[in-house]
Image 1 (cartoon, one colour):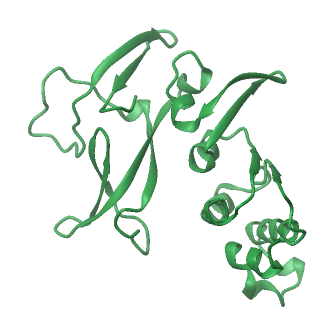
Image 2 (cartoon, one colour):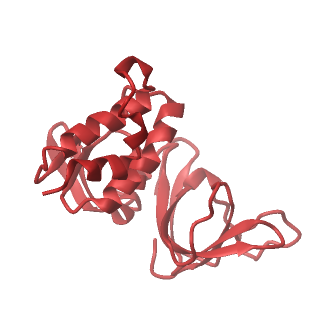
Length: 218
């Protein structure tokens, strides 16, 4: 059983205790509602599209707190969402439903890469890469991430950089990937990784979906 202050700490809302409800932002109200649910010491937490009523700015405000909640709780959390971004960021095990029936289930990394599922098709097609941080490159300010298929360099956008060896997920959208049969030279592209084509399938008029394997990740 958790002390009610545990939820306040996980969601960073201790400083809001003396405010009136009308003085809270949409994201703060949602964090307060989650803390109230945690105060009952549930054995399972059900979150049914908790960000659906929030605009993009408020979603960006609350998502880091949901990540911290996910890491800090020792109870199962069932998170219902239509947002691929939220699922990619928060889900460990995914259950994909269609018309009330289970279409597939498995790890988020696995399901988002399966060409036989709708998650891997259309404009939102993407792959999840699980990596660890390796610090900043002092000469460029880029964050270095290492995974089974190589190293990724990304702009450091966090106010406080993550410590080295911190596990992170990177969602790489298919539309941001370019393929070449020879190693590109004299290009501004930062991340050039060797990969093996695993499958090719149609993905709408004039488009194909190509599966790639880097190391042990697809």
